[in-house]
Amino acid sequence: MSETLYAIGVSACGAAEIPGYERMVGTPPTPPGVMDVGLQGAPNMEALTALAPQLILIQAWQQQQRPRLERCAPVESLTIFTGMGDAYAHASDATRHMGEPLGCPERGMALIAACDATLAACRAQLGAHDGRPLCLAQVIDRNVVSLFSAGGLYPSVLDRLGLVNAWRGAPNLLWGGTRVGIERLTQVPEARLVLIGPAASA
Image (tube, rainbow, N blue to C red):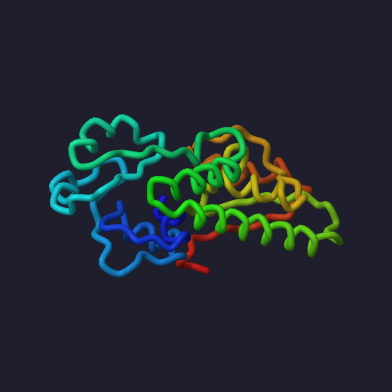
């Protein structure tokens, strides 16, 4: 939610887990003056109350927090990751809906159009791709990797680029990843391995 908010040019008085966001995402960066309000699953209610926000944005998986968050401000719930379906379409819908209560719907639509145009241009550049499937992996430790499959943003983007995702295992992480032992990579010997690191390592 923070990434999308900043991408449409809107700051915030507070956001959850800012150090983690900067380490794992990083772009767009957190604007100056945004206060860290604690964990996504357990926000600091004293900090939220002191900030007196006009609106609180949460994802659908945070719905159980809605009653206490509504003591501070109106709450808008948006859905991106559900563990199934097309995460890119979900993100587009969330971006479109985010702009409405913020009074800048045109910014959300402009971001969606820009992303769609970028993907279309990239797909055109990949016309000569050999068709070899890709296995998208994020290294957890020496023995464990997260492979991206159904419900994740990366596989949704692969589809739009006309590329084939080699990993078909059912996801066991909310954002579409499947945490498995590294030996499971031998199940897709035909795949080209693409390692995805956090933004800070790029």
